[in-house]
Length: 566
Image (cartoon, rainbow, N blue to C red; front, top):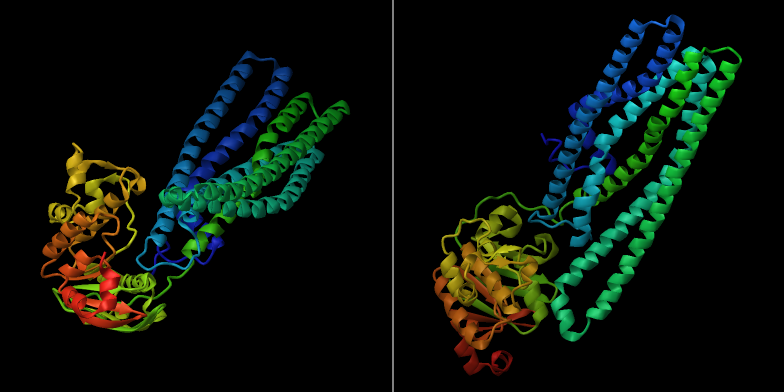
């Protein structure tokens, strides 16, 4: 049976219910303690009224001392219950926000992608701001209940003094909440739009940072900045709208609460003037009228926070409820380390067929860059097996039948633009810390000059996205990481496009030597890598049109010679 922590939510409401159900214990204790706090706060003006009544009637020092002791107990209860109640609720809130952040990040980091149509910047906003705002429901519910307790205690106490005072509080509270509940819906819709626009601005920033170097290269950075400014301005204008709506909401709540407090005070004064309530009851009524503004304010703000939490939960549901683009197989193991592409048709590929035997080093010379990209996407499982015709087999098993984890254990496709992460050279090459060929991978990828350049060696710090490395250094670092993984089947796509010809020669020899006896497929137009391969497949117009060694093709195929010689 699927646990509540792992089953897929059905929507924003389901996410909120899961958060509430998971924190029932903390919310119960928080509600009790915050209820004690509100009860103590309410009891203070009631106690003052009783003290005034009792002292004026008996004028006893003992009674006065007992009253002071009672006030001390009330103040202590208020202080401790607030402190421990908020500690419990905030801990639960923080923990729940962390759970949803991990859940959203985990959903996006799954080997099988989800068709969310969201960019990385949008997902980042959902995993941070929306997760935090969704978890706020953990605090909202106990505070809502405790505020209701305070209002009810005040209404009962005033009703005991005079029924009209109690009814005034109840009717006024219902009227205030009715008005504010209507206004909170506008806040919810405005907040959803604001979150969407902020997320789009975040996605634009992520795209801008990723492409900053090439943008500077051809002078497109100013146009990109203007595009971001437009998106950011839209987000700012929507934020101003949300702030304006929130300000109107807060001002309306404060005004209505003040009107109710004034009505209670004036009614109590009139009743005291008429002699229908005593002086102590008047003091109690005036004190409660002043005090009741705080729980009423808190009580009236809760619908707004509920709507914000719901809007954030619905945005999280965009990620969590979207199914994977494909349903992976369940087989856990493949026999052998051969790679076979059998009549694959996808994009520009038309009935592509070839086989790389276990331990063989094969290169694919793709005349059209789009065909190289399509082939790499199919092998990397970026295209679901049911989205293309034909079959890809690893170790004799269809990719469609294998679990994604089993494919990843056997087959690694190093992307053309592999990401570089903040950390060190070593952590980028061997993220798990388990590789036994880190030094050999550094040597084969010709990353040795980068390591030798810095006193820290492999522990040299790398900035986010490799901002302190050149394009060639980033490419060689990505290649070193692929080689250090030491998988049974390795696919490399254009691993040397950013290095000079001499370095390319050394890399070709190093990769061929390090991968000797391991299945390797390189999609490239590099003469050095093509020459290092056992055989070369020519991919032209979506099909394999020729097959031979690099030197054999140079001698017999004019089109090949023109395509790969530099």
